[in-house]
Amino acid sequence: MKIISILNHKGGVGKTTFTGSVAQALALTGYRVLAIDNDSQHNLSSLLNTGVRQPNILDVYRAADGAAPKLFLGAVVKTGLPNLHIVTSCGGLIDGAVGDVYHLKHTIETCGLERYYDFVLIDNAPGLDKLQAAAVNACHEVFVPTELRQFAVDGLVEMERTLKNRCPYGGRVTRIIPNFYRNIRRHNTFLAALNTMFPGRVASTCIPVDPVFDEVVTEGKILFLHRLYSKGAASYIKLVHELFMLDEENVWDSMSNKRNEHIREQARERFFRRAGSWPPIVAQDEEEGDEHE
Image (tube, rainbow, N blue to C red; front, side, top):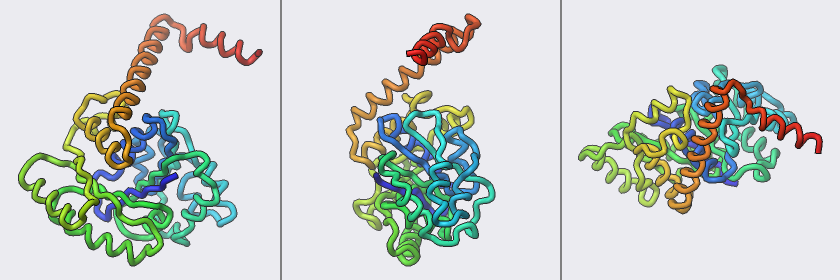
């Protein structure tokens, strides 16, 4: 099991969209994924269509060491994808809730999550305080989505230095993901600068500017099931292939098959709703038969 924190001390760089999209892509590819919303704005919880639940990550931080693992497992809820679960957040999550920046690490280790998940992705609020330190100490790697702007690029070196000082035993920045990319000279200049500052760690796949990301969030839909042929979805498929060393053709085939299954299921549901029988009577009879066997 690999634990990855998605982090940037700046806001508005696309961390939550990145976390949700990668989590969905991995789940659709067949991996078991747990997302942890470590942000008081709880946008990841909204993006994955679960909303705030009880208990949530705040309750885990507040719990005593002995009670935290059971509470953590109780906070895990299903999303709309079979292989994707989430621990939600809430508006009351603040740095003051974190008494020990190793509490989340010890909780996850005690839970034995490796039996249940292949990947754990932790979405973080902007900043470099206790909440972020707890996530970094709990993870194996840190992924950093970034804008291609001067202040964003300049701040990455300082951010990495701060993480090393504050979290000497935590995960390290292994990948930097250029976000909101346009094929223009200014962005390509910043890309070259990033590759000079962080050789071998900048993803070659850039996430482009694409209104599809806002569309799926607004409509409560899943990028790879409802907008598979968009520029944004294609970029994320390439990015997942690059970041996790997956076969790009297999990822695409898996996404396409899941999308086709989803379309068939939606058509089936529409048919029975028009017929005035939903859930379908046949399906109900089958379920009842299974129960009697």
